[in-house]
Image (cartoon, rainbow, N blue to C red):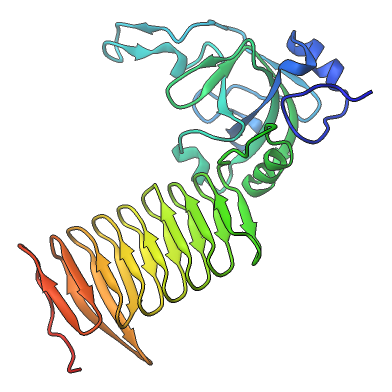
Amino acid sequence: MSQETLFSGEIPNLDMIAAALQCEPSEVGLLLKVVGPGRKAFINGWQWPGVGDLAVCPDWVPLATTWQGEYGDGYSLSSIGNGLHGSLWGEGALFETYFREDAISLVCAVSMRQKVTLPNEIKVPRAWVLFEGRREKAAQYLLDHSPKGWIPKVIGQRYDTENALHMDGGHLCVLKGGPKSTLSGRRHSVLVGGNGSTLRSSGDYSTLVAGSHSYLRGQHESHLTAGPFSFLEAGTNCVMTAGVGSIMRAGKGSKLSWVSSETTTTIYTSYTHYQHSGFWVQETEGSKPLPLPNS
C-alpha cells in the first residue's frame, strides 16, 4: 500500500529513514546541502556521511538563537553551527560555495517537524543522505521528488523544451523555452526563449536571450539580447543588444547596442537612464548618447 508523503516520486526504505530521523514518513522533506571535497563542510570542515547514512548534529540547538560577542550584537548562532544547515526543497539563498568547482551537492531526507527556519535556510538535527553528485543532477533529483501541489525554484535546475509555456527557476538555473514562453529565474540564471517570449530574472548577473517581439527584464550586471521590436529593461552595469525598433531601459554604467543586418552599433554607454527605439533616441537627464547612425 502506498504511503502518504509530502513529495512526489518514491524513496526506497522510507519507513527506515523516517525512523532514523525520529519522525513519521509523512513528515519527511528534502534538503539541499553543498559541501566540499570529501564531503567536508566548507565553513568548519565537519564530515558529512555518504549516501545511505545518517548525519547527526553533535551540538543541536532547536532555536534560531542570537547572542552578543566577538561577531557583534545579534549575530546568529544558527549560522555557525547548532544544526545541519541547507536549503529546504532546494530553494534558498545563493551562497559563494555554490560556485566552487569542487563543490558536491547532497540531497538529504529531513524531519519537517524538527526543522528550524532561518532567514536564508533551515537547520535540522539529523539528515539522511539520499543523493551525492553535481549541482544539476541534485537539482533534477529534487524536481523529481518535488512537493505535492507545487514545484520549487530549485537552485541549479536545467529545463529545455520547446513546448513549455511557463517555467520558474531558482538561482543558477538554465531554462530554455519555445515561442511565447514565459521564463523566470533568480541570480546567475540563463533564460532563452523564442519569439514573443517574456523573460524575467529577479537576480543579478543573469543572461537573457529571446526572439523578436519579446519582453526581457534583468537586474544589475545582466546581459540581455533580443530581436527586433522587443522591450528590454535592466539595472546598472548591464549589456543590452536588440534589433531595430526595440526599446531599452537600463541604469548607470550600462552599454546599449542595436543590430541591423550584420552591423552592431553602440547607442549609449555609461549613462544614468535612457530610452532607445530603433532610429530614435529619447534623452533623459544625465544620459550620454553616442552618435546615432544615419537612417
